[in-house]
Image 1 (cartoon, rainbow, N blue to C red):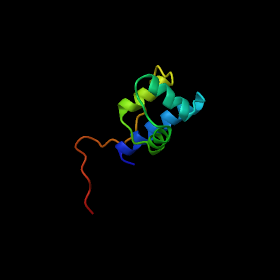
Image 2: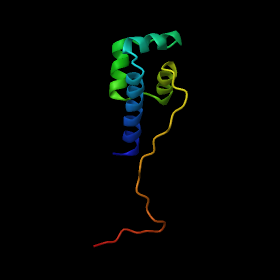
Image 3: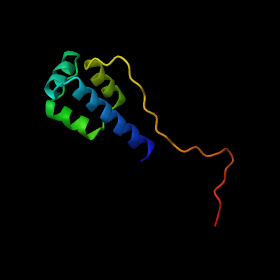
Image 4: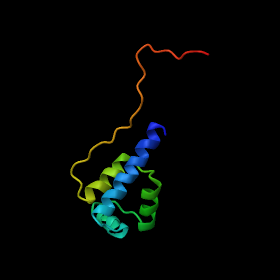
Amino acid sequence: MNPRQFYEARAKSIVKEVRETKDISYKELARRLEATGVTVDVQVLINRINQGKFSFAFALQLLAVMGVEHLEIPQQQVPLKAPGAKKLAR
């Protein structure tokens, strides 16, 4: 999984986990977004969240209307290469 895929998947799961933990329906989430000036159809909202293809700004809007005040940023574990290490030819 490349870094972009990792972070897209984590953003999707964070938004879904918060929504489920707080027991907020998609209809309620759309209503809360609309109260902040963001109009989105419920089915479009469901599709965007399930696909996980949304901007960081949209993720922040979603999290804000769900009452999230703090967020821990997930880190992808990537094996580090030693400085100057070269791949051995066989």
